[in-house]
Amino acid sequence: MTKKHILWTLAGVLLVWALSGYFISMWFGKPDGGGTFGDMFGAINALFSGLAFAGLIYTITVQKEELIEQRKAIKMQTNELELQVTAINMQTEELALQRQAIETQTAELKMQREETTRSADQLEMQRQLMNYQVVLTTVNDLIKLKNSTIATLDMTIERNTKKGIEAIKAIAHQSHQRSRSLIEQDHLKQLKQYEKSCTFMLQFVIDSDLAEFQTKNLKKIIKVNISNDEAVVLRRLSVDEGNQHNLMLFNNFDL
Image (tube, rainbow, N blue to C red; front, top):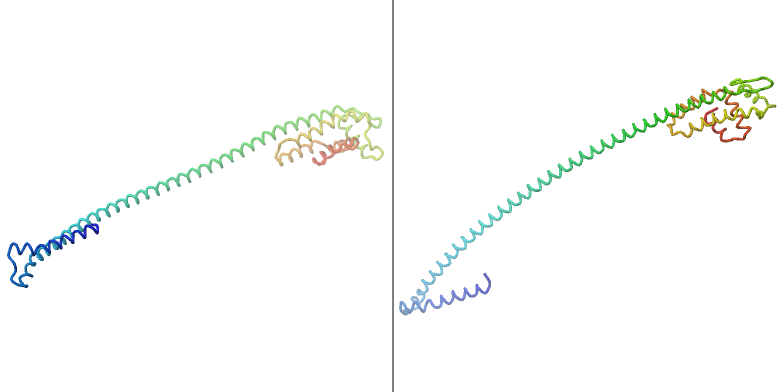
């Protein structure tokens, strides 16, 4: 209710109260004295008291209805909050399930990565093994080629005919004599093919893509198949030719 409505209501009440004396005098006659005049307003006062009481009852009723409506509204809000809490709990559970799913996927990816790493390691080991087998087969063939080259040697050393490994031994013996520092030219021609087969075999092992322990094994195999006399002759050839690369190869293989 606005201020204007309140003022109009008060004005109406005062007007009714003021006019009540006039109408009572009209209907029941004029009062005889002051006491009688005051009693004229007893009825209107009772009327206003009744109206006030009725208004109080109405106000209480309206307030009761408002309280009921407020209670209903609060209950609806409570239900809505409960629904929101339920929705939040469901979202929390869903997030927990998603987190578990992500953790499971992460674990699976980790296992797959580890499996891939193991597979890659196994493939690398297989590749190295196959490569080693190929290189080993080639080295054995080169050792046979080296030995067959030695078998073709036919030299006259100190007026004696020397063939094969005996020629190598004789030249190695000459290399230990200070007066014979150089290999004779006619011997050198026959030894060039032998030297090439040996240095090619050593360089082939160095250039091969092998693990360190595999290279060490091949070096041991080659060293076993090259005698000390052969090593002396090979070094003498490289010294006479000034071939530092070959000398480094021989040092690498401890020849």
